[in-house]
Amino acid sequence: MPYKNYIYEYHAKISSGEIIVGKWIKKIFEIIINGLQTQEYFFNAKAANKAIKFIETFCHHSKGRNDLITLELWQKAIVSTIFGIQDAEKIRVFREIFIVIGRKNGKSLFASALIAYMAYLEPEYGQEIYCLAPKLDQAALVYDGFYQMVQAEEELEELAKKRRSDIYIAESNTVIKPIAFNAKKSDGFNPQLVVCDEMAAWSGDAGLKQYEVMKSALGARKQPMILSISTAGYINDSIYDELMKRSTSFLKGNSKERRLLPFLYMIDDVEKWNDIDELKKANPNMGVSVKESFFIDEIAVAEGSLSKKAEFLTKYCNIKQNSSIAWLEYQTVEKAEILKTLEDFRECYAVGGIDLSQTTDLTAASVVIEKEGVLYAFTQFFMPKNRMEKLQATDGVPYDIFVKKGILTISGDNYVDYKDVFNWYKMLLEDYGIRPLEIGYDRDSAQYLIDDLKGYGFHTDDVFQGENLTPVIREFEGIIKDGAFKIADNNLLKSHFLNVALKQNTETRKFRPIKIEQRAHIDGFVSVIDAMTVRQKYYAEYGELLKNAA
Image 1 (spheres, one colour):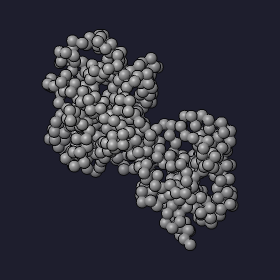
Image 2 (cartoon, one colour):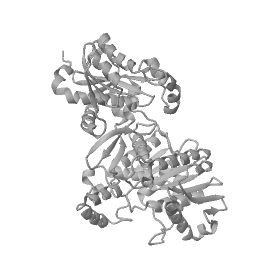
Image 3 (cartoon, helix red, strand yellow):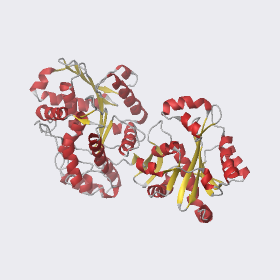
Image 4 (cartoon, one colour):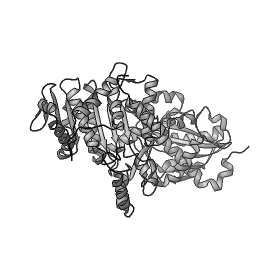
């Protein structure tokens, strides 16, 4: 064949064990290979190899040496995926590229080479290419690396003109420019390529806003791209966290994203942080740009200092001290669905859980019922009338269908009337004889609802949210993965399970549930976990009743 397919070659060596990678890299290449086999994707070998050939023919090292770059197999596979994976119309599939990789693996050089290829050989006329960072001097790091690369190659330098604030290529009317955060002034940009370097260091809200502005600006182009390359960092609730949650959700099959392409070079087992083979998973260029002996020396330092260990975990293992990843696999949640109704559980004992909306959107109330060793969850959602249309548009969820199915109750006008939540539990008891022995709730819940429940005779208990839920979540994960937890015909509840990410504290080994993205909802899941919490707490007292043995 005239062109090599480095995607298949890399995947084959991963599969055979010749190349050691982590679970996320295995997963992304499985997705790509499967997409090619099912013809969801098409491989344009000419386009892929054109990019590789350009980089290895014209792009030079810019620090410590100036010889031509020789791409490693993992880099060739990434380049091939970015430029070679196309749709049936020969348009590149992926527009958001997210590469997480350990320090000293040549990520800035790699980014500069990708800029060079797109600047000189991208067919679109009038390109705008931006190197983006919180401050201009930070943005200039990749930008300067690109310019040094241009200067090292006569053919590239002849076509490029260095101006005061940018580099201009007249032949294609292309501009390459470093820019600092300024979300308001970014609205007029029309980028073909945005390069985000070390985005783990981007501050929370400002970074999120800037990324979204630049991402939305891509829409005017035919084949635009936003490329983010970073090691892990220390800033919480940042765009890095957001992309990590979205990426792991996609890799687990939980999202319908089509344009996101994550390459997450990370260790799998934090307990093996000082194992060289484990470190290869986060450092694919080990033995090339960075020697194995370097890591051995750094491990020796880190083993004697907690602060150095934390730094090592972050920078060389890509494990944030508070890492956030999507939790359950799509297949796990899908297999949990079962066509059961409340009618199947008449006269059963149960536990309950409530997650009350703190604003004006969704409230969720659940009961969990055990029968023949299997747990069954029934969840009722509540939403105010005047919020439904807006939420349906912003969330992309067909709430009107869930109303018709009886899963969602329209309650109140502008906020949920918590009397409806009380009446649901009352209905369970009076119509079906289903008796919740304990109902867990967040202590921030509306007190009058709790008073109504207690007044009727229900027992309630407040549930502390946060890392203290770790034992319950661990227990629940085992139960659902073993097939012993079922979701009773409720697609809305299933989606809430899939929207959960776990924010893990690697020091305490504890975690708390969070949303995979800002607009996602996990209210249904939280209500189930509140129920599971009181079940665990009171099982010694009520366990025999909760088994509902014949």
